[in-house]
Image (cartoon, rainbow, N blue to C red; front, side, top):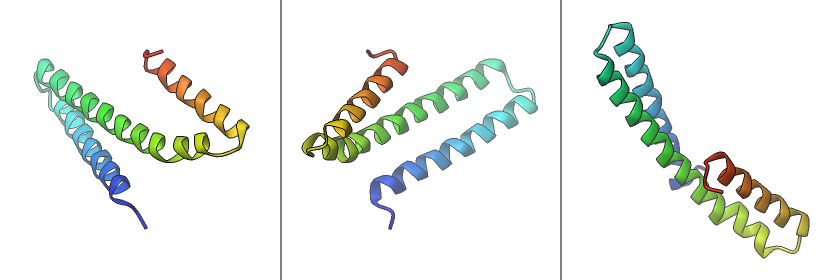
Length: 92
């Protein structure tokens, strides 16, 4: 069974997918460059929001479970994963 959070993430991803197809069509049809850039920025914003939702879900499930558990290896793994995310996004 898919929970509400997962369904929201999937819905947003499908929306972005459609938006990207629209941007591709704009480029194929020779749309004004600034309009194409504006649509790309909108896609990037949508992906950033989706990324935040996925990270939030991860923090409230996998990370919480690992930190509350007794497995030191699992705790270290999730902390290293989070550091990797922060480094990849330039927030470390």
